Length: 222
Image 1 (cartoon, rainbow, N blue to C red):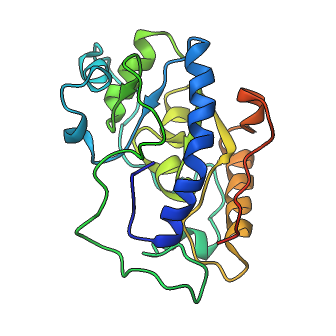
Image 2: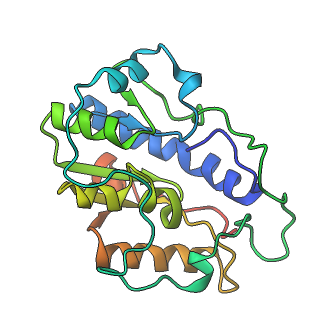
């Protein structure tokens, strides 16, 4: 959940979703859960902080499987629809103005409306995440954030990697988003991605099951 991104629509959805993410993690933290923040490529920003040091100093363990970016796994999942698999630089609705994408990238840290507490951890490294989980004998991992068809599934700390480790991830389906420009609309694409994860990778829940209230909903489709 970066502080910003190149796509103006994706950045707007992150701003809208982040306070609800913070509500959920605040309650989970109070109940004793380990909260791991993973703003990719932003580790220098958190250097020396308690949360970053907690991840960096966790005793390393030998991963039973390769740790890295995991794209589509033809051995266990159907191909994604073309619009969801396409590496588009923009996630705005067709016709909306946006940037051209690409470097230099504008993000530097996690969006500030999601609090990083001293007892949390910060990492964008799969081996560090595995070390944190094994140190605490954690098997059940609630995953939330953006974007489901990219980072949430594919990164070295994403859902595919968790499954390959033998962990039991659960996607918080109302606190995720997808990065695409399908002409059938943004919410349509996100629903397709959630269904894909439920069918091939892991179960899902909604944030009201974690923190009460109602499920999160975007105010606008774009």
